[in-house]
Image 1: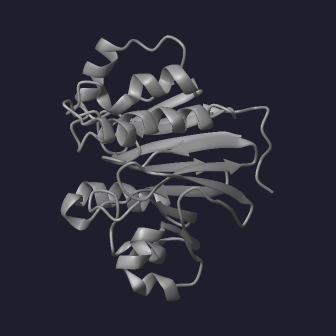
Image 2: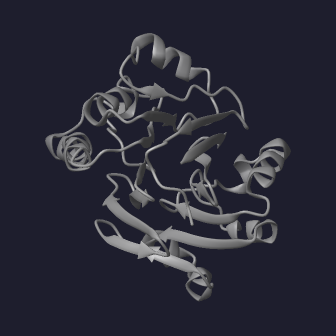
Amino acid sequence: MQAEISYIFHNCFVLKLNRKTFLFDYPSDNYLSENIRNVLQAKIQNSDLYILASHNHQDHFNRNISELAANTRKTTYILSKDIIKKNRSFETMADCFCVAPDQSYRINDLEIYTFRSNDQGVAFLICCNGLNIYFGGDLANWDWGNLTAQEHRLLVDYFAEVLTKLKQRPVQIAFSNTDPRLNNWAGAAQFIDTIKPNLFVPMHTFGETQAISRFLAEHPQPVTGFFQYHQTGDTITLEFPDLEEDV
């Protein structure tokens, strides 16, 4: 199986797995330049597209995502429950699935598990033809410093608990926040050291992709693949020869 990952903006990426295309956390229009729109349209054109949105924050969800369907063969929407609550029009859309935290789902031939976020919405674990893909949304180690004991339990300890659960199965591709505003980079190094995915994809930089170089300077990654992108459209391709193709 071949996996192709393209950076769009912030937490928005396109993942192509043979005949399937996944779009994660497409942000609101105010984050989208003409170039970003053009690159994305080229990546999803004539695809069988799965749109996944982890929560309702503007940097992760665009209320106009249904417009993307005009450029695809087929579109399936997988949206967190908090999105549906605030955007009721999606309830009546065909091929739209509402997912709640800490649940498992069978959607077409995908197995999807959700984790409750310690910010809002969910994180996803997607199992496709034997490939396990983790997409964290805003689930991260949000240690802003000077946390109360309760905040530490909710933000720091909870993130560690999720990693303990997640490492029970192999994760080949992992998208997790690497936020340069935090001294601990939102737990990125902790994630890599614990989960050891084949490929780690940093995100949540608000377009400041030069911060990724600073992270790598502080945290050399000798034991895992790492997607160091620089601009919208940058792409990395991986081969998983032991995993089955789509049929």
